[in-house]
Amino acid sequence: MQRHDLVYLQPHESYDFMSTSLPLSVTMAVGKMIESQQPFTVCRQDIKNTIKVATSYIENNRKYRLALKLSKAPKVITPPLELETLIPQLPKQIQKQTQQFIDHCSTLGCAVHVYGSFANQYFTGLPFVRPTSDLDILIVTQRNNISQVLLAVESFKRSTNSTISLKVDGEVRLHGCNDISFNELIYAIMFDIPTVLVKTLHDIELQNIDVLLGWNTDEFEHFIRSNK
Image (tube, rainbow, N blue to C red; front, side, top):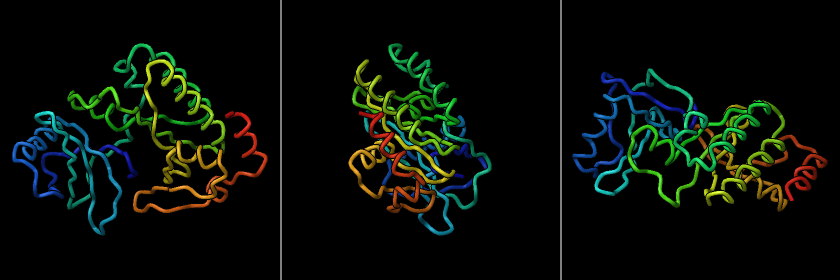
């Protein structure tokens, strides 16, 4: 189980709300979500002996963030939604370049997932995507080629922004568990900032980029030159 994984709760699995101030209609909606097999998302697990999952819900034009705590590990857990699955629901102007980006990442040994507003709207049919919404993606890389991955991300970001003013945000996952904002990582590399925030399933901490990426000076300089 990792951050952003999807949990499909079963009717027999018990849960409690982490907030006691939710309207009754919203709490009842969670039961309907479970019945219709809408997934919940794995959160950071920062409470001992408690498993947390979350989702979002819209009622009367108000967005609710719903966090649940489970008494036992869920039975059905899957990776996050693949970005490729979402392509038919993206604006037509960026569908082709999105597929090209996914294909490029595949050649680099990366899987590309989506979370946030676009994923919530895909699963629920509710209007989570607004004109100001970002496309939040998670890139899971298995190789030591992060410079090429970041260059691909930068190219995709510029393409979607110039085409339909859609901003791309999200994280890159290193070593199977370390999630880093790729925008923050790119900024740190370009401006010679030595540390970056790293999120794991249980913690958030500053880590040294040199140690985290294992890059040498030549590789840093190659990325900077290529990204200008």
